[in-house]
Length: 86
Image (tube, rainbow, N blue to C red):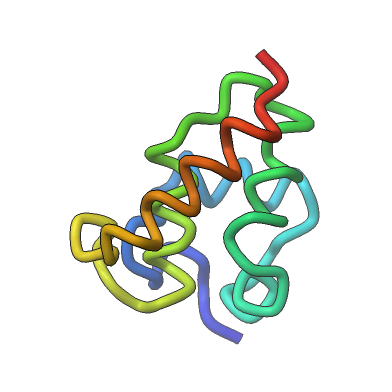
């Protein structure tokens, strides 16, 4: 069971938010995926941003968020726009 902060892009604050919504390990995040994890975080932080979503996806892929493929970034942006609470 790896710590969330062992993943790329997941710092202490993001890890704290993930734990608050029941995502306690890196395995939990990988099983859930970036989009579903972001939706859960949004329940406690309606201002959850695109950079968090990119960070979560990078963590799932095991890469820094700046290395995400442009097509995947576009998909994530569309997902966020369709699901944003504020």
